[in-house]
Length: 280
Ligand code: AMP
Figure 1 (cartoon, rainbow, N blue to C red):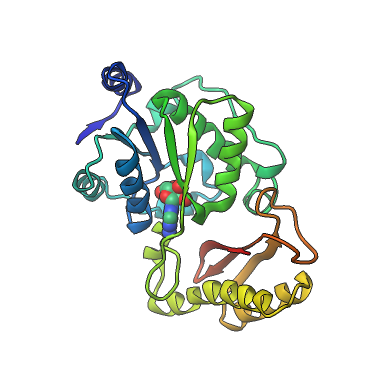
Figure 2 (cartoon, rainbow, N blue to C red):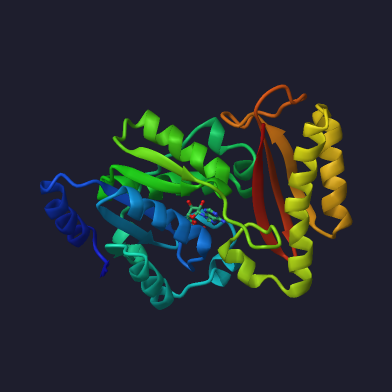
């Protein structure tokens, strides 16, 4: 595996691959790899001839400086992990490579980026995500790009920009990977104390309870949401939102009459966690 720092070098490396008509896969990440990241890399490795993993902690998508400063970084361990999985290129640019002096363009998705996470973190969050993902897609020109269902709204933001900007890339969505206790893997979990971790389990419990109530015939979203919020607050989590929404548009539902998605954001011990679960 080769670590690459510049756009020019990455393009040169991929130009050779493209001459051989190979399928290029891109896995965008912010590093601190866990099994969620690794599941994306494995899938890309299975489906592509050349696998590029980008590692870039995008400063502009953090709405709090403290969250950015506390974000875990361990490039050496990440490089070893990616190499072990057979990744070809780790693209790990400095911020000045992607955002040189004078950089002044924003890719701004509309409605889908402004609700839920966009409403809580500010619309600049998904603008920053959309901008960096667009840059990575344009720089790499992959045939397929791999994203996790864990960040369900991010998937829809990326889907929107791929469609609107006519980017010739297939979006591959990989299932959420969880720890044995049900907590969705996240780089932020490293900051949870054992007591926080106990509270973090409430997110999955609330999602499971919702799914089970729906299977049992409950279709009233207000009742489902209040049960879930009671589970979360009873466990000590601070709830930003728990909503049951249309999986394609994230529009709030009032009754569950078809496919739905339960989405949750809550803080435990000052660490903000998100999770979601499809309800069929
Ligand atoms: P991040 O480094 O947090 O920006 O995540 C990079 C990619 O990994 C994104 O597409 C995430 O959705 C995905 N990802 C993060 N956590 C998980 C997980 N627990 N299961 C599956 N994919 C994940």
